[in-house]
Length: 393
Image (cartoon, rainbow, N blue to C red):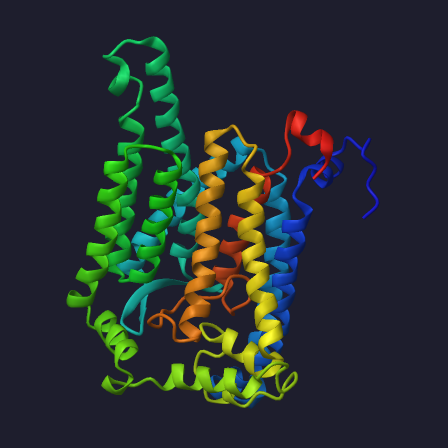
């Protein structure tokens, strides 16, 4: 892309300030999404819908991936202030729609997480809640840090609560508590654990009260233990992970079989057989399809792309002085990396199975667009600004 450094247009400034390496890695993951949908979706469509609709799922995902790439680039053009505003509006809207699923949502596999819209199909609003919530909580925690600095500079002991040193973090925890109640009611324990873990990471990076960090961490652990004893489907998954003989392990058995069949270089595009039996071959277990058809080498490349995005983003933050940018980017990166880890580790039977998509690779319109929104925010927040832009991206 030939863009002069003297080009002062919006596109020119964006090209020389955005992290082009991260953008390239994300576009490569979208490319893998195209390839994996071409490999996995026809078999699933034929089994679920019928032979006449073999290409339906693939064509739908092609549209979603194209929209995701456009959305990611469009959001990356925004300033940090605009990102904060977009996240606040998105958080309020997504939270309202997520709460609406408890009333007007439809149930699938014992959970109410989706809304149906005429002509648009289904949507899982909690997917959009994740990136927006991470940015909003980052803003609240950053305001708390700013209030603490103001109090320290003023040397007046009565200003802590007045200027928000405690108020802003309390608002963040109150918002998180409301989100937790809604997600637990669906129920979506996996999403809840991701949201809580991301907030814990942000709280830790903010350098706020370590006692509170420990309390939140204990709450996360206690929540996981409580979910095991209260929710039957969580208990079933954990039991099957610890003792495969205790229940149905068909999907994970087939996934491991797929990795074994693929070996180092895979059976070849379109030559996979396990995908014909895996119910979620195009979504939760798309990594297994990649392992069978393209082998260990391509699986390792996908893993390295996810790791590169996370590590590159964290390195990019080393010279950042804006606490909001640091916390928001940390939350978005933690969310992105954790979701990828959960999906791949579940497919490899390293952790109990969890219905969580592989970012930008698995089938799912809501998931792909929400991840693109979050990564667009990340690219916008980590753009070089002011004197930092002089050295390029």
